[in-house]
Length: 303
Image 1 (cartoon, one colour):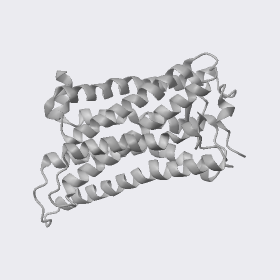
Image 2 (cartoon, helix red, strand yellow):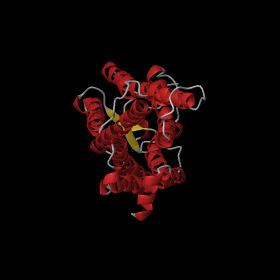
Image 3 (cartoon, rainbow, N blue to C red):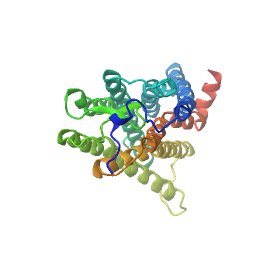
Image 4 (cartoon, one colour):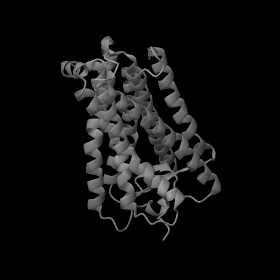
């Protein structure tokens, strides 16, 4: 049986009760509210204190900005729209705007995770010798993350691909369900270049980082100048990467299943769960960053 097209959920799934929608709204509120507060705090505290304006922190602030944007667009809308009595149509314009905005912020955040993982790999593993990751490198990486995301999320606005309702019909995303050749070609490029490629960079950097930490811990290893601070920051980044991928992999996996097996049946409610898990990733990163970084924690409580 063919998977339920997003348009079937435009007015809400008739099999779902108002209680289910209210539960989804409450879950999204529990994620969105602290996400807004914590990501805004990361941005404000970092901008207010010069000692935090370091290359790694610039990338972390960029991630916080992207996560804040995703929470403001996708999170807040998910809270309001799921709680709205009757679930009236989202409207084509609102669907496109929400789908575009959430996608831009989400892919920017994913690219920034790749940037952060690579930064730690260069700093800790030193594959290029004494190469120093400086502010200019962080600035270029941040700019590229936004340009890459915009470059691959703009095409649906001009006819290559499209944004459509997903899950229970209370959010929008690139249309994974369409069998139109133009839309399928866009989705395949999107999955490869906006999910698979950053994911491969993250895994490669993550693997190299863990291997180096393991080797440095060996008594027979020649390098002894890995400081405790470097190791701690590296572990913080690894945890952030794991948390982010925990949020996004189920969503990307579901999209791949729908694209490559269009006849698979996925109920709207089941299809919504990976969407909400992906949106919850906006909460993971500031939690890890604030509570595992003593310098930030002291400034956070001071602020």
